[in-house]
Image (cartoon, rainbow, N blue to C red; front, side, top):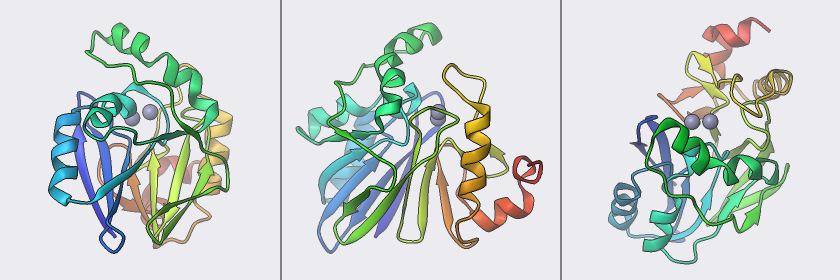
Length: 208
Ligand SMILES: [Zn+2]
Ligand SMILES: [Zn+2]
């Protein structure tokens, strides 16, 4: 499996492209902005885009959806239903920041805790990890975790935004660090890390 990231938009969000050359399937995680760049990267890889997976629906993770879907019509968007209020209000929040934003059409599929989603023969288990957002999920597979805005290298996601929940965040982080230390974490912002490196050095994990 090939993993590519693009840093997009004013919030420097990591959009992830997963490509399984054996099946020719590709998935995009969190197409947050700059859909033309994302589409170029997808076209360059030459696979077939089968799904858009969302870790959560903050505007910096969903702003490129419609642009990608214009180029790849009918590609289904997967979101945990608890993040639907966030998704539906994204354009209003963007307007508050004074940012250009294209409100995406409603998602097509609901993600659930424990669900397995596929990229070719690669299985990814969905973990519902609320706190930063009510319907925040991580995709865990191929010894890698696509973790959105939960755990960053040296930091954690914000809990001071509307619909954040600090207690849920703490529980989600406690659950996350039960994963094997060698597991690679691909976050929604900043460089990739591992569970072990964050357990050893992340001050937000040491604290509690
Ligand atoms: Zn976020
Ligand atoms: Zn973000």
